[in-house]
Image (cartoon, rainbow, N blue to C red; front, side):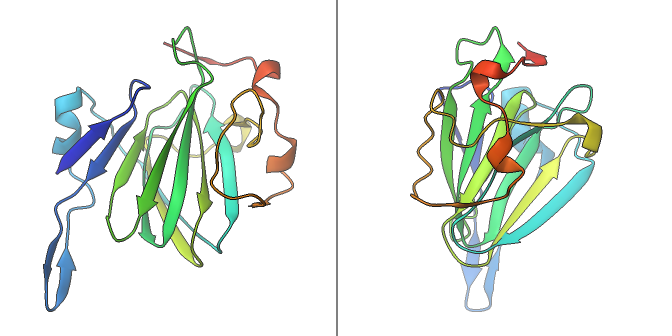
Length: 182
């Protein structure tokens, strides 16, 4: 398995080896060993799946401590632009984001540790998005940042995404008191 790190500490893309033949293909979608070179030892307790039509934007979401979640995300079908925004107070990259193109033909995965807001926009019809989480979802711990916050300036790659009413009223980063720190 190959890996790629990003300018914001903690974010990692994994690109698995895919074994193809005339029957189809095989790949490992998770192995604890892939995290070892980075000194990370996540324990996943919940798997989630969503299916979205082209142009759906979900995010930017997070779970507040003590229920903060690390997420290993990928698409099983379709393509999505995945976004992680650093919300760790004291981080040199606080308020900055990374974008990772998740593609079902590449089978790549993106690790988003606790302390980041997470979101994605689908680029193809019926994109199936999968994520493994390191903590259980708790409605009372739910939080978010406005997807089009001008201070963050995310390039979502599309001009008019379909966004839920709930995600349209999330706070701006400047009005946010982060519960995360480095």
